[in-house]
Structure formats: structure tokens, C-alpha cells
Amino acid sequence: MISWVGIDISKSNLVVWVQPQNQGFDVANTSQGFDELIECLSRYQVGRILLEATGGYERKVMAALQSANFNVLRINPRRARAFAVAMGKNAKTDPIDAAVLADFAEVLNAPCDKPICAEREALRELVQLREHFVQQRDDNKRRLQQVQLPAAVATIKEHIRYLQAQIKLLEKSINQSMRDLDAEKADRLISVKGIGTVATASLLVYLPELGELDRREIAALAGIAPYNEDSGNHSGKRQISGGRARVRRALYMSCWVVIRHQADFKARYETLRERGKSAKVALIACMRILLIRLNAMLRDGTEWR
Image (cartoon, rainbow, N blue to C red; front, top):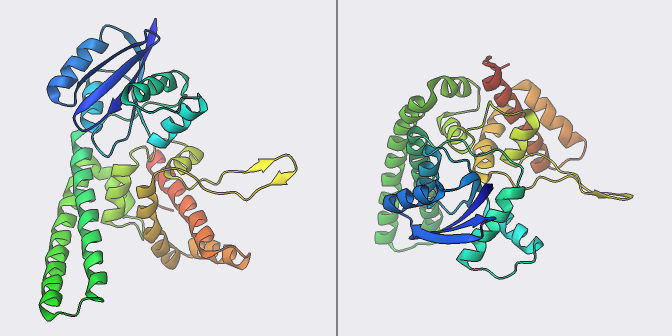
């Protein structure tokens, strides 16, 4: 009998539910707890394990389960909650959430996540630390406009200089780390005018499927695929929805540079604007084409055209 497993994850513990056996247990969110979890699950014929993205608390257990050859899928918590409401389960506790995930695991038609590798996790930490420092730097620059005390102004400026220096050091580490992960992919992406070191690292970290999916799948995964909203005689406006926000942020500024320096993208953007499309809609359309071309370039092992 195939079993379906849902795991509700918190900082300190893992609440596990197995269907259709209707059995639950919990273990600590530690290495020892992972060993206990794997031992318990090895008694079942597990079809899939479903868990939610919880800000990073799920990464270690996910890596441990993948190393033990379990099929693991991580989803956005909003999808799990929408499924629970659709099934009439409005109450919310850790065991209930784990049971909902187990039910969802049985009916969800989606490929399992790519295995977590140490090189990608190292690069992720560097990229996210840079993002944090950039946010702090920009917050301090805005704060400077409101501060009047000279001592406070001097302190903030000194902090900005410190953060800028750390950001530059991180960018050097990011460049080396992404080459340790996949030097060939990194070189191909950086060769594109407008795709810099940070954008390349972000794509390698947040979109590891790049170069492995078709054009529709990769656009949907990034959240820049337009969806229809039609019903009967009503034809609604197509809109993007869901996807990975960090991938869109990485592509946003890069696409502006591509539009500025590559004639075909510039012509595409200007044509959309002339047709009455807003700047944001035109940019999203260009971002989608850019991502599709990057995906094809990596998939086929060709140079940028």
C-alpha cells in the first residue's frame, strides 16, 4: 500500500502524518530527529512527502529525506491552506496541517523538488546576506533624509560605507561560489549583456530548473506567465500570478539593461508601449521573453543570440 506523508515544520519540531494509515507522530527538528523520522518512514511504502516552505526551517530535513531517497515536494503555504479550505477544514493546528499536507500529497500532480546540494546552499546564503545588506544600506540612505543631528548623520554615513564595503566583498565571494556550483552555466548567463554576477547567482539559486523545462513551465515557475480569466461570454484581462518573487526581482533590473542595449528587446518594448500597454506590462512581457531565451540557451548549450 502506497503511503502519503505530510510534515508540518516549525523551528523546534516536525509534526508528521501518514495516510491512509491515519497515523501521526512528531520528532525534533534536529539531526537526531531526522534519523528518527527516516527510520519511522522506512516502515512504509512512501509515494511522496509533502512539506511547506517555512523560511528555511525546512531545508535541513528536506535534504536529509532526499539523501534517504524519498520523493519530497515543497510547496507555498498558501497552496496548502487553499486546499484545506476547499476540503472544508477550517481549523488549524499542527496535526491538522500535517494531515492536510498528506491528503494533498496524494492528489497533487507535480514533479518532486531538485535535490538540495551543499554548493547551492552556500551560494544561497551569500546571495541572501547580500540582499540583507543592500536593504540595510538603502534604509539608511532614506533615513539620512530625515536625520538632522550631525552625530547621527556621521554615524549613519559610516554605517553606509561599511555596508557598501561588505557588499563588494560578498560579490567577490558570490562570483567564486557560483562557479563552484556550475561554472558553465554561470559563464553562459554572464555572457548576456545585462545579466550580471548578482543576477546570475540569483537565477542559479532561486531557479535551479533553468535550462531543464519548456518555455511555458519556466515562465510559470518564475511567475511571469499570463493567465486567462475567461468565463462564458466574459473575456477578462490576462494577469500574472504566483511564482517565485525573488526570480522576478533578479530579472527586473537586468531586463531594463537588456532593453537599453539590445535592439530587438528595445523594439519589442517600444511596440508594446505604442499599442497602449503600461510600462510595467511591457516590461513583464520582455522579462518573459528574456527568461525563455535564457532557458533555451542553457537547455541547448548554445551561445546567446
